[in-house]
Image 1: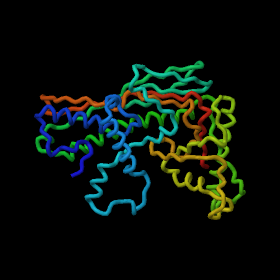
Image 2: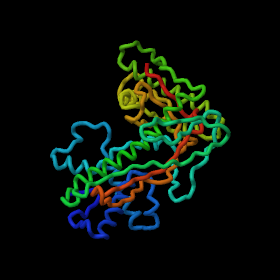
Image 3: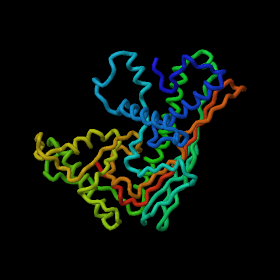
Length: 354
């Protein structure tokens, strides 16, 4: 059998201290894989650092996409099961929007962002509460790292009965939930830009081809023009910000909910005269990022990425294990720390679709 959390289950002895330590290291290794950076505890150890990069690369290649066709699916149940344990069902598309920096080797409690008049940052939320996003003030804002935690409990009988698949499935769900929460936090920060002072959506533009409603390409041609206007609006608004960007050297992000995936794809591929082989009508370079984590599903975002949209990872998902004799449970507590802020909301435009 092919396991992803721990590859020596057949030799595992729960009562052996070395085996338990090896499992704890494997759990930490497994939980950290979705992060872009090598975890602090593996830095300085060439064997683990190299293995981490190799495993991370293989995992990313095996990752299933949110949208596939029937031919992409395995033919046999065994392949389905094996591939399931290759998957990482988490969303890290926001990392293309934010300038993500690794602070895991530092002793800092946050970082600073140079701000403009309109800027945002989030604060920690408790379980069940909504994210609180507040406006920055002044020319510089300090973004604090907040700690987020959760726990995973394995019934000791799973080890006694060698139910390795259930142990691994629980670990997969635990890891995915941790990264889902982090992703949801950053997507909520992006959506909060809509409520900042002076923000207005880019209206759905008139087709440059003056196509009539119901004509093939009518919607796509209007979406094309809307994206072009959004990118132009961003460039004009930030031209004196010292970013050094231009229409020739920047690729914008089109962040869209899954409900608009096909519209975004059609717009980015829309051609002159709607004839295959003709040049596209898009004036700028756009990279689509599709997510199911936006609360608004009838709008999409055009974004000038990185720059003053900052994210800092202070602690990767780090696990601590212990046995609770009163509940006959092997517990693993997972903690991660991160922070983020948007120092210039002029990098973001939300677009209407009707």
